[in-house]
Length: 131
Image 1 (cartoon, one colour):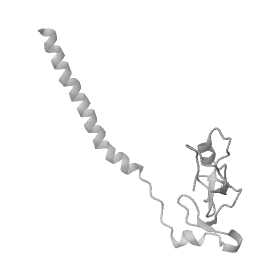
Image 2 (image 1 turned 180 degrees about the vertical axis):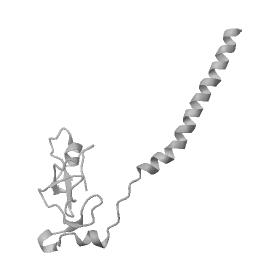
Image 3 (image 1 turned 135 degrees about the vertical axis):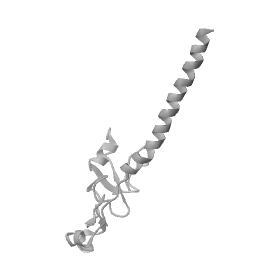
Image 4 (image 1 turned 90 degrees about the vertical axis):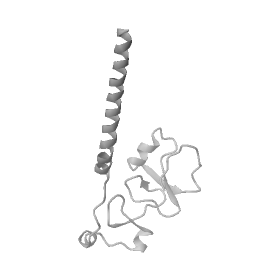
């Protein structure tokens, strides 16, 4: 009888701890999410005035620099290196890692991909690519 009483007391205490931990987790989840939210600074006239002047003739296609950049930059052309943190490829092209790469996502993060025509690359399941 004593063993049974101890085991029934142990269960509610354990459940109470679990419920308390869950409650704390939920309470701090909103704080954590709001702290992780990142917003780019606005593109002020002062920041835009510091941008280099580009022309469509010298560039081909002008795009906004990646990330929080405000300046226009030249889109990457066929064969040029590309990746997550580089300007995007020109319209009609896509950034692909090297076909024989063991770590295709790492290549794209490090800017070691190459811009290629979308039709030139063979589609395969699970392949890494950036638009």
